[in-house]
Image 1 (cartoon, one colour):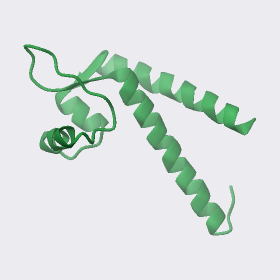
Image 2 (image 1 turned 180 degrees about the horizontal axis):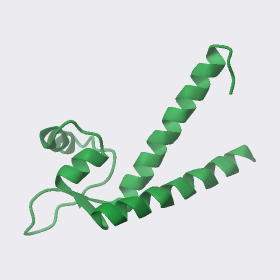
Image 3 (image 1 turned 90 degrees about the vertical axis):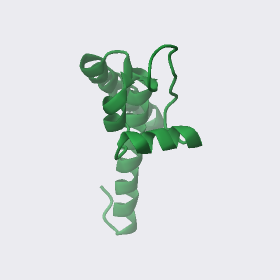
Image 4 (image 1 turned 45 degrees about the horizontal axis):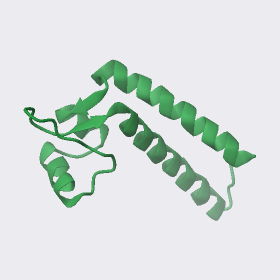
Length: 101
């Protein structure tokens, strides 16, 4: 049951984040905005990660346009998963310390 609730919370969080990203950047995120959303320190770091195939979301190139583009939906899903991982890590740290929340 709790897994179903967690999934619903995650899906609602993804939708919330996607709405925010769509409002801010539109359906495709690129350039400095993509660097910021994916928490890379610089555009160069993003390019290097792309060359290594290590980006956390799928990116595309568009003929006649410079740079890489990511769908707001994919970025929202990744952001929600990182939030979930962070909260899971905090919860397990609390249990290990004897302080379950």
